[in-house]
Structures are given as structure tokens and as C-alpha cells.
Image (cartoon, rainbow over all chains, first blue to last red; front, side, top):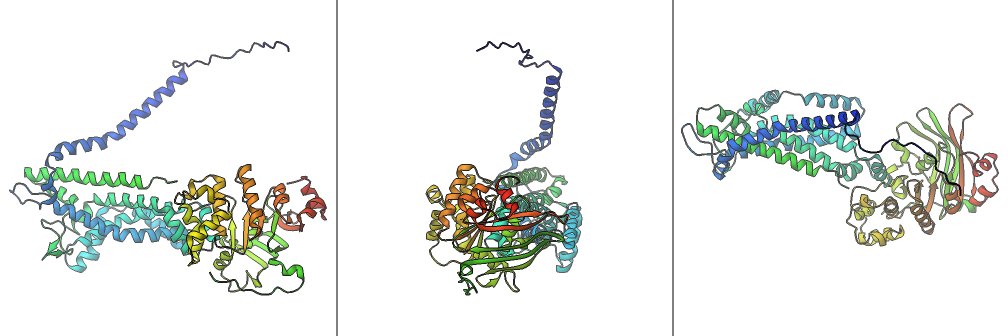
Length: 297
Length: 272
């Protein structure tokens, strides 16, 4: 066995943090971290401000009582909370079926057809619809026809703003189902409808739910479309002991708008509390939607 | 489940053993002639292997046997595929019903995003099976040599299994409805050698109850598993790549005493 001691010069393998490459890399990493923190500042500062200003007024009375009149003390925004939930619910009841069916068409049935392309373009354009115009449409379609401001009118306006989000996210979710899974379903003898109902929709459900919840979170905070469809109200949605939807309905967003402009401390405090509640609702919906939409095995 | 219409096949004794008779004149994808002139009879209770270089149309022919190519736009089939006396490409034939009698296992394992039980029961529920679902699911999983590994976790997601187990799950799913013919499109190409061997052993077991048509790019697999082998190749004489059947016969004969020159060159590994 010969002694092979070839002298190969290997450069130093030690870390060299002061080398130019390392310095640039560390600097940019630090910069990225700083910018990320800065991006989080608006959210946390808003939350902080709301908790400080509105937290003290957030109690059971605020959540369950009716809005106070001019010089009254106490009161709450219970009817506005219910109103927001009801109108977002109506909006979802319209937007979710329409949105999912449209998404099925765009993803599966008429993906490249003229109707499909036109519909997809219209949907994308609709995402930029000024929310007040959604209110104008609902005003013309419901308020003028029925003769009164009402919760369904507000719900319809909200649904117009929800539908594009639902369609676009649901279409993507359905398209993301692996093609081989569709092949398996066809191979077992499914009709196209069965493939969609038994395989595509269940598999795409987490993504669809995420889209729906994001749309709901957006709709919960909309003010402009409710201004002249549901207006506002100081009463519950009951009349003679049963639910009465066809009357002006309060909502959190409009209540905040109204109360924050009043010269009464009581109302302004309530507006802060309502703002905190609204932000918490939107935050919880977003967190839940991320949890439900996480990729499963 | 509806019973298959039985019709007595005509002519010779050998033909009496054919469960499917594919006489393919032309297959087009739009203007592209993909396959031509291939007569492939499928014998009952045997494993028929399709081998050949890539692009020779073996998968296309396989998928034509259960009308899966209908899903491809521009697909046109000229010829006939007789199955129990009926032409699968005849007028009025519903491809959905065809696929319920002729099952398929794909190259990549593709279990549904559901529990193992629901995966296997899928085809049974689709056909409105009225008997004991649990029993049939167990039978199918035993038939696919998967029962012992999953019997304690039937509710787990089908996607949580390993690649080889997923493929056996897909086989269980396909045989749950007891199809007349099982088409397998390179079922082992995405699996490691151990899993491949298990699936091959499984195929030899399944042969007792099912007729299998197997596409494989692995010649050794064909020698291990197939009773009859059909060798396809590509014809580039007209400027396009058109697949066609070169030779078909008992596996031993194809590999030891091929009649065609092209077959001889392929099985000797002179091209692939």
C-alpha cells in the first residue's frame, strides 16, 4: 500500500461573518424581518386602540340592549349585532348557492366556453364593484319594489359583494382537485354529475369554505350598501311577537357610523365598543376559515 | 347490480373464450392518427400484456377498452370493441355503464380524499349495492392483499397510506364491484420494487377470478405475469407517429420465438 499524501489546499471552512457576502445577506434578512413587523403594525395598533377605547364599555348590556336615544345613558347595540348577523346570513344564503354552482360551471362544465369566459370576466370585474353601487342596485330591486327599507334588501346588497369572492375561490378549489382523482371517479362509472357531487365538491370543500368565510368577513364590515337598503333602526326585528324582516334594520357598521358622529359621550363610547365587536367578529371568522381551509392529508 | 347481458360468441372454440374482442381500425385525436390496425382479443381468466416503446399507443388502446378516452376532446374510434356480444362503441351505448363492468387501475395511485372504507365502498354505493357493504369491503380488501394492514384503521384517510398501499387500495376499489375485466395501466411504475413485487403477486392471484389487461413498459414484468402478450410499436413512415400492433401471442412465444423482426429487436433490448 503506497502512502498517498497528496497535499490538496482546501480553503478555510470556518464561518466568516464579516465577509461581504455574509454582511449583505444578514442585512437583507434583518430588513425583511423589520418590514414584516411594520406590516403587522396597523393591525395590532387598531386592535390595541379598540381594546383600550371600547373594551371598558363591552359588557352584557352593550351586547343585548337597544340603542339609547339622545340624552339617555346606558343602552347597547344588541339589535345591530342581530341585524348584522341576519343580513350577512341572508347575503350568504344567496351568495353561497349561486357562487358554488357558478364555480362548478366555470371549473368543470363550461371552462373554456364563451359563456364561461364572459362569466369569469364579469366576476373578476365585479370584485371591484364600489360597494355603494351594490346598495343602489338592491335599492332599486327591493326597496322600491317592496316599498320599505328592509333586512332582505341589505342582505341582497351584501350578497352582490360576496358572490365574486365565493365564485373565484371555489373555482380555484375545484380546479385544484387532482385530475387523477377525477379519472378514478369516471373509471368507476360515475356520470359527470356524480363526479362533481361525490368527489370534486367534497374534496374541494376546505377551499370553498375558506372562500365563503372570507366573503362573509368582508360583508360583515360593509357600511355603504346598507345605508339606503336597510337604513338603521332602534328596535328589534320583532313585531307582535314574531320575526319581522321587512323593516329598517340596524347593523353594526351603520350604527358605528351614526353614533360616532353624535355629540354624546354615551353614544361615542358605544361606537367604540361596537367597533371592537365588529373587528373581533371579522378576526374570528378569518382565523376559523384558515383553520378549516388547512390542507388535510 | 344489473346482470350483464350474455350473448353467445360466434365461431371457433378459441373465440368462445374471448371476453372482449377489440378490432381497432383507427384512433384519432383530432387530426392526429394515434393508433391504427390493431386486433386485440382478450381471453377470459388470463392476463394479457401490452408492451412496446413509449408513444406506441398501448395506453390509448387500453383506455379505449372502457371508453375512458371519451373524456379526451377530439377522440375518435373507428372499429369495434365487442364485449359479451355488444359493441362498446355502438350507437346508444352508455359509456358510464360500460365503465361499471370494466374497471380500471391507473398508473399513479389515486384514492379519493375519503376514508379507506368509503374508497372501497364507493363503487358499490354508486351501483346501489343492497347487500352487506362491510362484508364486500372486507372481501375486496382481502382480495387486494391489504386487509391485514388496514383492518384496524378503516376510517383513516385513503391518502394516509404509503404509495404501494394506496395502489392496492385502488385495486380493492376496482374489484369491489367484481367487474368482468380489470384494466391496469402501468400500475407498478410509480411503486418501489418491493411494492411492485407484491402487486405482481396480487395480479397472479386475481387472475383466478378476473380477466386482466395490463400495460407495462417493463418487459420482465410481462414475462413474469402475462399469459398473452401484444407488442405495439410506432410507425413513422408517413411522417407522423402512429402506433400499431406488431405481434400478439403467448408470452413465451413472443419472448423466445418472435415472428416479427421488430419484436425480436425490442425484446432483445435493441430499442425501447
